[in-house]
Length: 175
Image 1: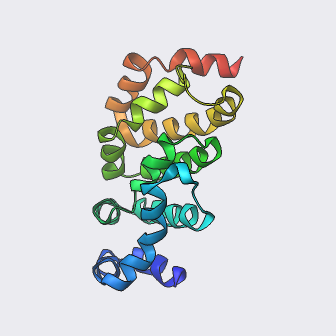
Image 2: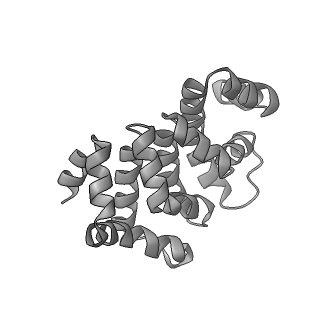
């Protein structure tokens, strides 16, 4: 079923047909919806794999990203990122890096405050969570920011380097 769904993602019409089919949509989104509703209860592996699948689909193009957003498929990424499980946060970072590749995904990340969160963590302003795990996440945070810079153009570069204060943390990582 997952292989069929991924094949459908290449065509926005086929993806729309799958997401418009209530039983398919429910089956695909149920693991993510349950985990997003109660991230403190743990995020099952199936929900993380489903989230990764939707991240890959959303990165195909703006039309697919919009459908994933509208269906609620990306809600778990926010819940995972804002949750307390540091390893699950790494999964959210992987999805964010994928979303950063398309303009609609960049907009989604900005609209949900993820870009500011990433910049804050890169600057070392991450006050919550386990400090050693925050250090483990840092390469993934920088990867996300690199994807944002590459896809976001001059505005993203200005925000990250000038306003966001990213240069200092980058140099510290290189030292």
